[in-house]
Length: 87
Image: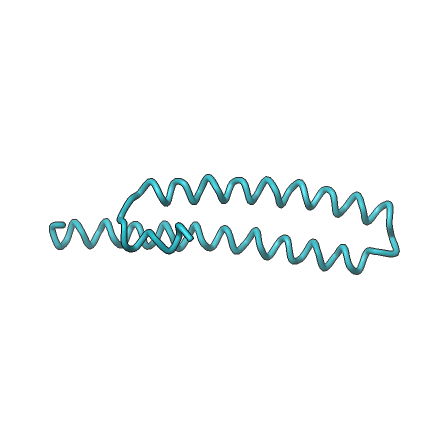
């Protein structure tokens, strides 16, 4: 939700907060990745399902990366516009 607020607020702290939250997503991903790999070793008959779960978790982690990148770019654009337009 907060990533959608950046264009209306022009607050650089939101971009920083989004980056911290993305770091949390990274941590969750790494813990989940390790758990899934361990489960694959112990439950080889579940490898197909676990591989799908691993892919989904990776896609979610990458989505968080993209949200942060878009938030940064929007924030930079708003700062440049405000400087150019004198806001």
